[in-house]
Length: 292
Ligand code: 8IG
Image (cartoon, rainbow, N blue to C red; front, side):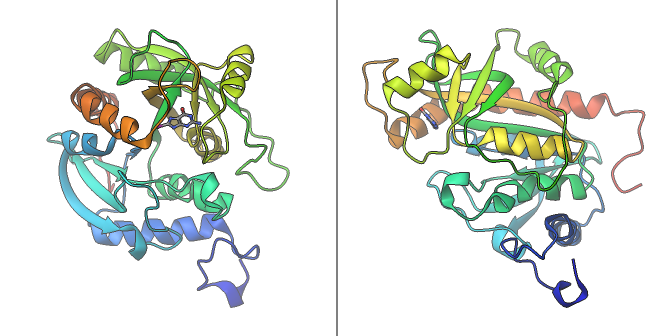
């Protein structure tokens, strides 16, 4: 970032360093939340909106619009706020994003991953990426949470700029998937396929995803996970199958169905997220608490 741009937080300006904007965003969040560090971040996707409340007590609610680089919510069912949540009865904090920017919104890929970079700048070591998606496995009823084991990024884009050859071999932490299974042993896992959207797939595209090794189709998480790995965050990805992917069931797809599946699954997903965050926190017991 050049001196003349030091006060510019416009992520679309190529002379602006997106990591500097993330650092500034983390500064604002720290100020509003009254803590210099958050430990774990969560991105709540379609169907996961209510689950944040179960993680702990909300200490601060921050409007996206007040934080450098963040945009307002664009999708119904998402709230445009960031919350700082005290994890259980501990001193540690979770940074909970109630919304995300999708690649299909056309605000640029830096905007898509800004929340991830901000989480890393805020001190987080772990990020839980959730989403609503279509399921290819017909035994996954709408409302079934599935762990992401790996992904296929079909957006033809990357959030990483320049010659940074980031290793994605173990992008979705096997350790965190195991941890999630100690909470909910019935959790299945699968390969998440990110399409650009915003239209859903054709049945032929869903078949293509299946032949390529995919199990879940969505529009968000792969690009965020790549950015998270570049920042050194450990990633847990959890999809909520809100609908059968096009052509897998005999129903047409609708956003209303997505919201209904989210409501139906709220209890299982809320308990899952809260217990996973508590267990992540517990394993850090020997480390200094946030702020030290
Ligand atoms: I919710 O069936 C949700 N998001 N690409 N396909 C894609 N994204 C989705 C779907 C789906 N359902």
